[in-house]
Image (cartoon, rainbow, N blue to C red; front, side):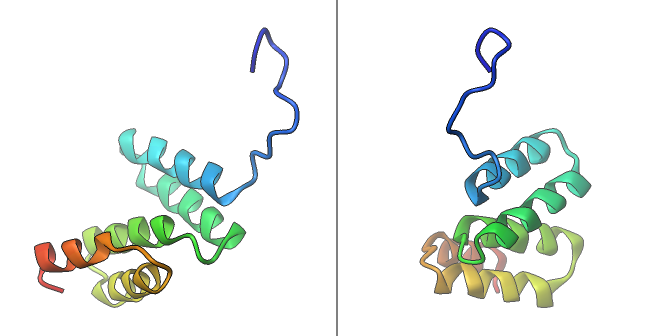
Length: 92
């Protein structure tokens, strides 16, 4: 917003917007909201590799390795090369 007026021609319902909001909730240590917005990002664009990578990390932290691997595979399939580094780090 600028001077109380919303910006025009900005779509706040995009996968990138939802992904960025999820990062805010990650920084605020609100895992429930982070999870919610990651799922919104993926619903808006199932090929959002960053959202899948972040969900993989979320599931790893929760101890759900099956879901972690599922989302890391999707992230890699959609072009995220950081997943290889993470797999080495966590021995997946």
